[in-house]
Length: 275
Image 1: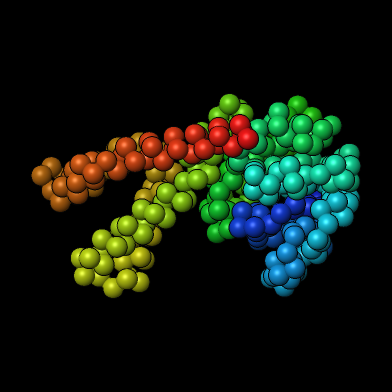
Image 2 (image 1 turned 135 degrees about the vertical axis):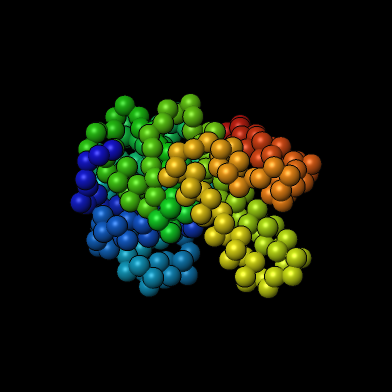
């Protein structure tokens, strides 16, 4: 969205683990909200103390207390904990004006409407690179979400990377690809670094080389707009070393492993919905 948002209002996080913290950090870094407008409800005293010390925000043990006067309520608990965390007292405490923003990956809009009835809801699928300003977020609103509120949700996430509105029918695939994608990337970075160590490089250097290579390659794909196969061809000389490496990857089914990883997420998400 093109509209420039200077402030998003008061935001209450219900749950604030790694992903919630990444969103919180992005909002603060982009100066979209003052520390006094950000609050979080988390069950453990140690985590509350950490968030207050690290970010200067107010924290609560009680979810219902945290959402008072909120403009946005970010549901950042694990999907398995949704029914436990989103109680009748919490729903009653959410202001009628508030927009509910859910990052619970396997909870669709219909399920969210059952959990938080009569509220405007945006279903969001971010990923953890939000914490370093390079997130990829997809979101889909229900019909109750006001255009201005949706602009602020877009600002909340695009300030720390890229954000795009999609149809809800795409959200499960988005979750399996970009939502879980950082996990796949870290496995591949670790594997490539291990290969570097096996080739004689020091561990720290191998990790740096592998991580920066993934970062730069991703940036090339985004900024050039070229198909990944075209970019691959640019570094793959006939009969050269790179094609030999790619051949080995194909022989070991790296491409098929990516297919299977995404499908495994879709299968697990479906299983969670069935519980």
